[in-house]
Image (cartoon, rainbow, N blue to C red; front, side, top):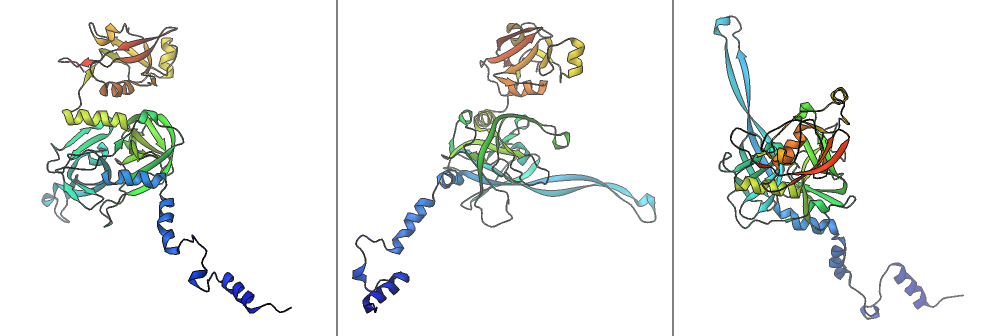
Length: 381
């Protein structure tokens, strides 16, 4: 049976998604050109919005350090013409940072600026600032691996510094940093995303990596690559929750095991550095460096997973806390301690008047006490 011509043409137009006349379009149809903004809006997920909020305050940090080498220049025939000398070689370095005050203060890692003779800070909009005096404008806390850089700038964007004690395992974690330094012309930061893998991680680096210890770190599987150190770790609502610091790696690249210093601790240390430097606090006890299983067994101690007090000064915070030689410190403020270095790091973050909650083992007795560190008196530390 023959079909009418208009039915055949209608089928052709339908197959080609064509309309024979503009007036035949259904009412309410959206023009193709109007769909673009709707598609763009749908692509702006939580990660995109978080990056938009924080990226303007993320900077690249490039450094120049001087490496010293002792060399011997030997004459090919006469030893008495030979002499020794020193060669200084410039070595570039890269890292990242995040603005913490609008008047030019930037937070980064100590290992990013360690030994730097020249430091340049570059913003995502292309602005670049050189640190005028690395002795005065770079404030460092090597024990916490943190540093504050001051540049001659005002009205800088400051991100929302979140509550790192409220971090949820499994929530979005976004690492923003500058892994390329000045190797590429585009100053825009690099963004990687993952989740918070764990919190309150206590880690000790290998001796060939400086033997440094880190406590209460945030673990993430967001890729943190060389050059990202010092940049912010951000949650899904655009709050900075940590300072990206180091990774575990066998290849030099990211294996999805990165660690960040919680922002509450980092901000507290930064405020102290800006105010005049790191203060030393005195607890009034002496500690054994590291209690081994063998020593604990020899002393008949309950456990070796603790710090052994070997001495208590008279009229000291430790004596007022009723501590005795032979006591074991199990934890401070709920965080386990395993060495004198762990305790020292907690004391470095203490404030005068802030009581520390100590969990103590004495023989078979386990109890809690409170210790209030004081400013170190002359001759004490």
